[in-house]
Amino acid sequence: MRTKLFFIGIAAAITQIAFTQKTEIKRLEPSSWWIGMKNPELMLMVYGNQIGQSEPQISIPGVTIKKIQRVQNPNYLFIFLHIDSSARPGTYTFTFLDKKKKRINSNFTLLNRSSKVEGFNQSDAIYLIMPDRFANGDTTNDNVIGMREKYNRREPYGRHGGDLQGIINHLDYIQSLGMTALWLTPVLENNQQHSSYHGYSITDYYRVDPRLGSNELYKKLADELHKRGMKLIMDMVFNHCGSYHWWMNDLPSEDWIHQFPTYTSSNYRPSVMSDPHAAQADIFKNTHGWFDRTMPDMNLSNPLVLKYLIQNSIWWIEYLNLNGIRVDTYPYPEKEGMAEWMKTLAEEYPQLNIVGEVWITNNAQLSYWQKDAPNRDGFNTHLPTLMDFPLTDAIQKALNEDDGYDRGLARIYYAIAEDFLYPYPNNKVIFAENHDWARIYEFLGKDFNKMKIAVTLVATLRGIPQFYYGSELLMTGNGWQSHAEIRKDFPGGWPNDSINAFTPKGRTPLQNEMVNYISQLFQYRKSNPVLQFGKMIHFVPENNTYVYFRIDTANAVMVVINNHPTESRSLDVVRMKEILGKYNSGKDIISQELFTDFSTISVAPRSCRVIELH
Image (tube, rainbow, N blue to C red; front, top):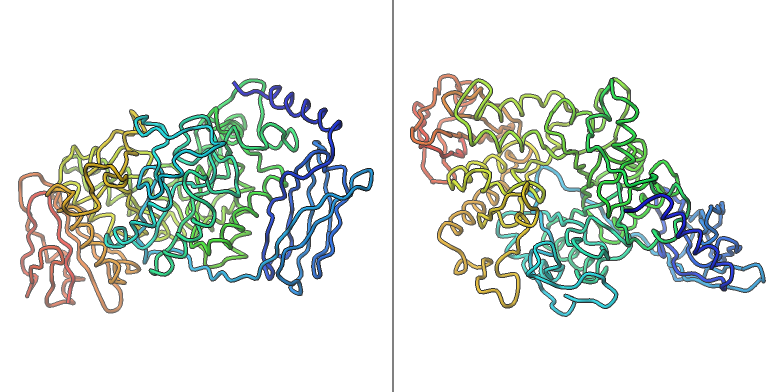
């Protein structure tokens, strides 16, 4: 059990030892920055024995020290710089004079900006990968000296050896599916004792986990994607760090993290943050309680913590020429700090897109979190994009139910009909599954036809589609029983795998059919702006059938879903005359069937049509 007294006791003991040791620098973060930022201010965090008692000196043209801030722990020093546009790139020396006027030096690098940020948007289709479980492209980094957890592919919650090189090796495959963007679960160092393969227990915010690769390899992945016209989305965690983060044994101050006399978890109730009747005790526990015993809760009310994390995200945007950010556990930190982060990034990178994980399946509560929402408390999150959990919930339930007024496909209709609650309803990432829920094929009772419908919905509804690795292989697993079940290794990603599902020969006929179906749909979407940005018009579901259109000034696509298990459906085309009356013919892009008139449109049991209208 981690307690307040434990952390403070460790810090006090180390501080006492520090007075008997020589002054030194162990870390300067960030150790590099860019010239020409819209905001010329930069905060440096310097860590080392007694460094807080030293006096920093610099001699860098165009760079001045605006403020020096010392904190409770003398092993830290915070330096606020102003970097003028007249500064020149190069590696410079920071000098620190201790009490005996002895010099301690550390390097700092200035770079010219070369980033041209192009954010992800509705034109993209996102492929979500858990790097440790996708492909092992470099077996030499499976075990790394200094990393607490060792390689053990037999352990469901262990390190399996997947890495960034494995992803680079299979970009052709990912692109062949029609995907245009990659979202990787966090790749930064997670030097925990066990079960940190997922990446959400960060122990160093400026270092890629060496078992996944290196900062340079991460940059290579970004460059390889950009060469292909693809995009990279980085998963960032502001709510918590890992319990073995290097600062946990010597915190800058007591309030760097949220601490309690005994371990206190979050109540996991983000709804309280928008609830006008919420008790302060519930709000406090949501934002201050720890997400997990191994995930200390960061205090974003501390301006130094917030500044550190904001700058870290900017550093990665510049370093990688990043296209977007996915924010983990978005409503669990202090919302004011998160809003400041969003606003800061928007000012520096107007084209960057950021999607927040706000795990709420109620549209009224979820809409509070999108920027510019007309919230009665006047709060603006400045968060541009949300993950559409209400739609996910609707899809998972709808395809397993009979028709009804508020059941079956009507669930999807109502989830979409509540778009009026959002300032930017198309700025939502839509998905049938992710790395936290049961596999959608499992949800749907391993029904192949239901699976095809789910894929069609994600590919053609409004929003930004996100697809989870392995869905194309009909992977199964119940995430509520075990996260390991929904995070299995991609077969063929390891040198000695007996099956290589990256190739048609390594897949079953049903898997190949699904891979081909996904590729056909998403390649079509990639080349068809109407499915990306077109207006959506849908009709109230009737008789297990849901019909909607995507239209723009020049094009239209009609989507028909029949979820009845045994009966075909003929559409009431007269009801849809307001759109169909403008077109004379069409082509089903799945079956290639041609329509020369629209007097009769039928759809087979538990199937769908995607018809391009002419």
